[in-house]
Amino acid sequence: MKVAVIGAGAVGGLIAARLTAAGLPASLVARRRTLDTLRRDGLTVEGPSGRPVTVRPEVTDDTLALGPQDVVVLAVPAPLLTDVLDLLLPLLGPKTRLVPMVGGVPWWYPADGSLGGPLKAIDPKGLLSDAIPADRIVGAVARVAVERRTPGYLRHLGGLRLALGPVAGQEDVKDLAALFGAGGFNALAVPDIRAEVWTALLAPFAFGLLGLATGKTAQEIAHDDALQPSFAAVVEELLALSAALGHPATAKVEDVWTMAQHPGRIRPALRADVVAGRRAEIEAVLDAPLELAKRVGLSLPTATGLLTAVRAETQQ
Image (cartoon, rainbow, N blue to C red; front, top):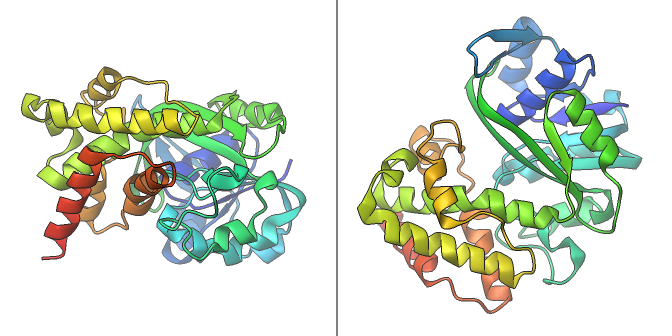
């Protein structure tokens, strides 16, 4: 099976490294400094046990030379997806399956046609929806915590759960689950990939929103009892939205609150990205859920109020 991974960041790098280490070579598509570093030094992953392992996947920026693949993993931050379409399209053949591993609400979420057209927050011109047929997409939700220390060094803090499911139709994805399972992931073919999206989004949404509003980290928020009512209200609103959309999340408020009290259980919050000068996934994590809420006529007063206040402060 020919596999290519676009994006040599935290998640994409971990996918490529684990597949390569298991003898399942995956071509890793990278650019500029990252490309040069990986070609020279390989890719090192420090696991939860602290022991680093270095692998040397095939690394390239020439997707025309790679040609059509059986599977393409798209592991690029949501704001940069349209920037890699030129790399992606040469990899798509008649039977290629695309597996996007993106944060927040993915652009393909309305692909079943029940919610109107593309989400303005993350695909404002419909470029992604037009370029990639929905029936070629296998939705993926990665529950992993990985830090990218340098372009060639990742620290895997924990988690290997990978949920997979078609975004349109009833395609069997068990072979993909077996592929990622061979790389050591707890890969599952799930009946409702959209429910997985909401379950995974609860923590980034709540901690990200409150982090931007208060200037606190997820761990600080989780240990601040004064913030618990606001936190609970935000999570309950997102749970209500997932239920209204017909894909209810499976976690509870207390599950999300407890999660942040254990370092490595959640991805860095939006505030950490903003402080570090990284391109934060605010549109996919915060704006897209609010857009979906408007489409189904559901009010999210606490979340909307907090985000409005954050935006007003940042524009001063």
